[in-house]
Image 1: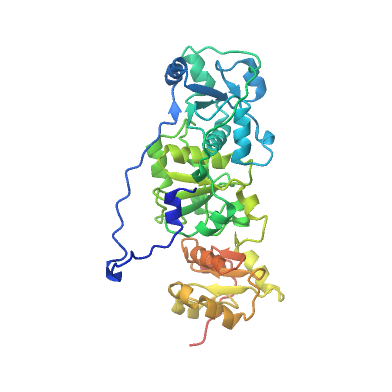
Image 2: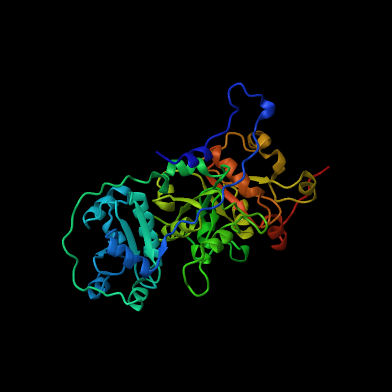
Length: 417
């Protein structure tokens, strides 16, 4: 069963029976204080856990490194290629083959270059139902520096049954993701680019196509300059700076959905680990963007002025072109072929405007182009999300808007008064 919190995010509130509409909605309760779970552990903590017999190390390094020297009692983790079809059931089988039942505390460790592999396995183990998953801070170097010994050779034979309960709330299906965008309290983050809104410029992978209302996010941005694990409080503060434009951030009290390229992309897992440490509710779309596009679903593409000009010059294309600025600004100058639909009238007037300007349009194929003032205007992003809910699949976000069009020297016809 999905978590109650996420179900509430995806539902529409209604008055309670017998309650006056004047009493609804109730005042929003204050957000609870964040809880920062203990995930990163020290060598001293692990030694104490060893003495109590309650911890099993899982080595995420390559098999050669494991064979050369690993923590006592450690099992080697598997590589992503060994998973076949990604799913909690397959992960449970791989854990059982290593003698892990799910009742133990599993401690992940590796080297300095293994943070993505650690993050991905942390998510997979929580999803599969491990009762406790920790990460050894500093990995093998920290263990040996603290006087810890290493064992060598292959792992002893181990097998058993995995009995932990799947943690459903660690993942969302494609269908759930399709119902979540632009829902109050839910944020989608696209982790495919190596940077997010760097200088608020559009990352190329995100521009080429993304799930409606998603924001680009570079998970490495949370790390300090020295590459150490981020402080949870600082990471939560930085998560609260994510947004479509400066000064318009998301809330770290939201429920976040992360997605990457596909099932083997390690970045969402790393993001999951960092968000969990920061006390943020987070889950992953396991198949990533590749799963989203397996069937015809709405895609938002960010286009430049040159790309849009070429599209408008092709007679056969005739895209839907909507100007979301104020009516007076539209009269002063707008893109050729555009129709005015001020954003404050968008939901009320969208269907009528489209029907009058483009009767009988095929919502599955015909491009819908939205623009407003410029990069700092988020009306087109929100309008594209609304259009996606109404069945439009080919949504073009001209993020540079009228500013970029004017700077390119393209025509801006006026409307007669």
